[in-house]
Image (tube, rainbow, N blue to C red; front, side, top):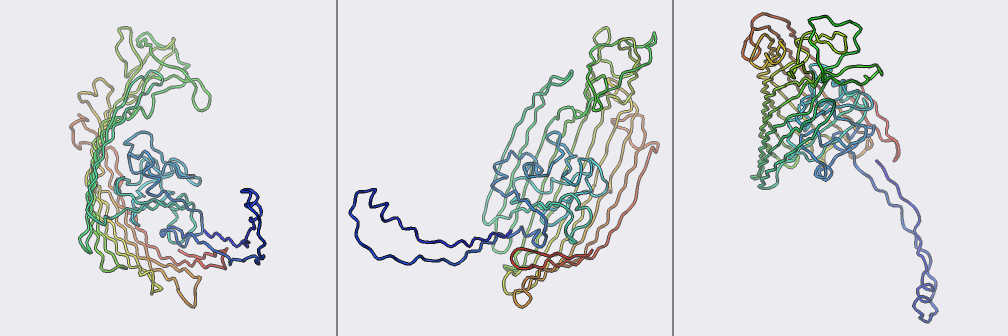
Length: 486
């Protein structure tokens, strides 16, 4: 951004006015010629992550983040313009980014980086493939920069929505922080009238020993979210039979297309316990060269339940079968009020090296290697209706163990300081390998059963190799021409 201010500033003669105000006699004084000051130009630098990008950018700095009620990392950007985080409740693992160019289920149309390390999950494109926000703890965020739109050859086509770069801080001296939060949400909608409580604890510890810096961060979250969905049905035109259970307790309203519907109960009530730990080591070979290694671990145990509003003549909740509502038949599937459990354990390694002398050289260099491993991911679903589902019964277990990705990025920047001043050239190399291992099995006990009969399976690998070259050429003080190819 360039701000130019060059108005002539002339000396204003106030002697008469001041003298009159205080009733002082005027003395004859020689008139001095107006002084003309030279123009002053003020230049604001773009974020380093988007230095040679001409599109709009926004920043959430530490001051804004500290003034924001940040519980999870993704909360740090919720007040930036034209960005929406699809976070339904505290602890939601499906908090994807949405923007003007991408919707709330287009996860693959935005990119999120942590210290230039990719944390976006590009194994799919839906609400279920959210960035791995946990890799940066809320306490260690220094700033978050956002670029809108695909306007740089340095990023792949997934940047059609936004590119977000989180920068974490490193300690200059010994520091230790501990914080705790508690939250409670009264929730009343349809037949649900409840309170959902949770808490979070975090710790950050770090120090500097000469050229070596280190930081440790820990976090624990325990929260129950409000119902994320509801069991509904359109008005039925089928008459009830004699054996159908007569029920009460349902609610009526209109759906998104303004059609009458019935609401049978609340579903997807998620109780999640999440833990994360991370160690980061950085060694400064000089003021221009730094090597950084980070190792992160994240674990999640979640338990999803449902609540039926329907009651039979004895006042017992009804979860399945054919029911009679006002003389019409409605059929509740065994999975209408489905229970599920999930165990997840993820590891992430990253190694980055940056050489940027800033002064005395036209060149800078950066390299980044990442390895994300889903060591354990077991999703268990009940295929029988409650209350039986509470103690077992047939179901499914889905394994995602071994899924993950590896990336490698090299970038070389050339910014001439003399002779060819005005050019900002970046060229680099990108490689990624994404591996999907997804198998679903049927079993006789969804709570404890292992793999039995194969229900479905998806497996495969996707590999991408890219080269790019881009020059952001400054034409005078007011224009920048960017040419790039990938």
